[in-house]
Length: 141
Image (cartoon, rainbow, N blue to C red; front, side):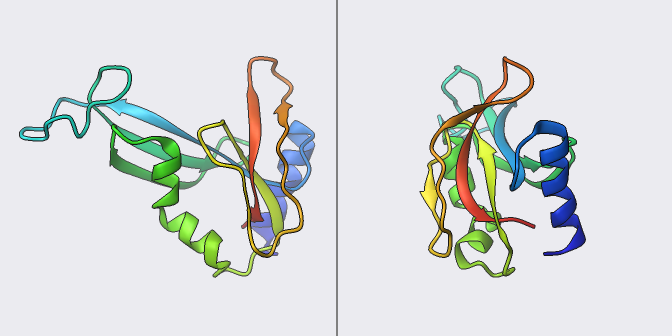
């Protein structure tokens, strides 16, 4: 594991009392003007036109990965499933050590072929209003 991966995991443990966490992921709709001739492609569930920003952050809220621009009609899980980050995780191309990513229930729980653990329970962090679900047992940076 490289130094940055160890630091990310250590920071999640130190700051959030969450062992073996490689990052937190979520998507955000960014409201835009309706692109010409786009029809309902960018029209989302909240009746706005948007593009989606999907990000993975470390324990200090610093971006580690970001993808932006997918039309607002789709959900976070679909954006993630089509991302280059997901491809790298699926193939274990970086030969990364075991760990988990956390996110909300928009992301599917799944087990990688080389992982021993899969978590399914929701975890409350220090702030009561933040509830994250471990969504992936996967290698981390």
